[in-house]
Length: 319
Image (cartoon, rainbow, N blue to C red):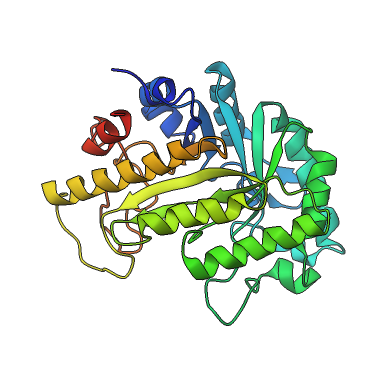
């Protein structure tokens, strides 16, 4: 069976998010199908450093070495975020300088294998009555606070690494326009932002396929590159709190059709999209297990709980 990365060699990289556990338990799938890795959590600030000056690199080192050993790119994830950032940063004399020291240390350790980095993650508010998410970073530095961190990243990260703004609900019209305006403003101010990460945590109901196309086209107007950074396709609407013991044939067919149509669009825009990363590898291990409904399975990926290809896999390979 042909691997995903070979099939899409002339289009874009195929990535997966991983943990120290899954680079072992899912190693065969990773080696066959993927040529880019994102640490699900291991490179986030709190995973590397829970107390001032006390770093633990073991988990990230193992993933980084796995990527090097298997000739895979690494997508750096992430620096400025409202979650998984230790509170002590905001008790220091200068949170900005604390982030600078962190960024420098991480860039020197992992920069060589990385081709892109999420400098900032999920900074835009979903609600219609606000623009920026009211985070501690925003409270500390106010409007246009991301400018300083993208400039900092360009100073500290190797020049080959593209600097990304990453967010979810990126295809929903309201959020799409906020993200567009954010990046447009940064570029007009000369801020070195190279790309937009479209997380793409979708479900069978939203967003519409044409909304995905419109988002790609809208962001492309900015002259940036794009990556699909965290793709999965839930079989449940977000507000649905029901559960089922196993996925039905109908649900798997609908999921397969959704993946198929998404990848048709991605291939169409291969000159803009540099990679498509799945937020997981197979349905046995995914962040959607138990979220947002405790104990519920979701089956959002291309491979099933037994690591076998699903209909969605075959659909995106059949072109």
